[in-house]
Length: 263
Image (tube, rainbow, N blue to C red; front, side, top):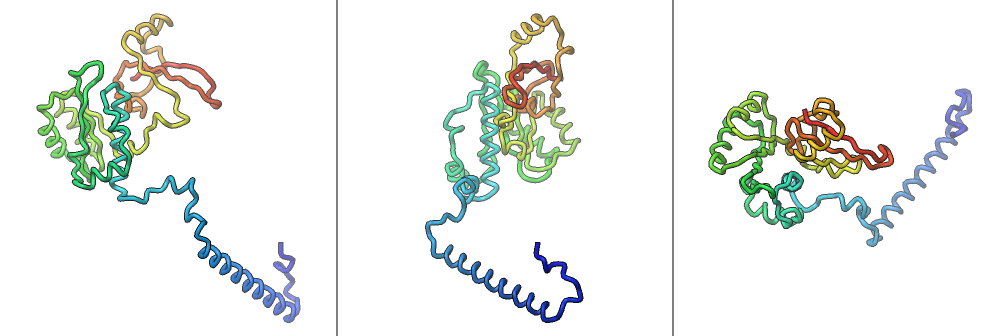
């Protein structure tokens, strides 16, 4: 701490002027040093503008919109793969520059839509549709229904870019005869199952569930619960009654296994 910071008010004017002169001189010296550093930085072409560890996280090559669409579409592809649907590896491996070159040539949301079938049951077909920006209204849902009603779908995933009203959400259940999942685009910018703190989830088959209940002599209602609107349950598209095996393996949680029943 500067010993003159709280000096008594009775100190002489000479002392005050001396202190001010000293401070002014120090300020001039500091400014001169700062200018020297700036001049040295301008002359040093070898110093990177941004540290390498930070520059790898920056997106300098295009629009924010194309980046969001790329991330959401990639997560949707990974989600379908994890649900057991057939997803081409080249789609999963597509890079952001490749996506931008493909997308910006003809930026139409219809091009982002894709459909595929279950690996174990080709008759079970799912389609992913990106909705336009702005509030999602019943008229838009009816339009989507008109476009997909003849595709013999078993499931539909809508990626929203705006608010959806409760009345519109209810209309989805009335209009479509099959399961429709809705995700805000912001929910798919990151794949939550890849988080380092997220335990591994394995969905049990009907046979696996029956074996578990028999082994422990319990019924569904006696298992720990997971809500149907839980983030992981929504990612895997799990319905009520499905049992998930949760595997913990970290320093914080230790190594153990538990089970959850979707309710």
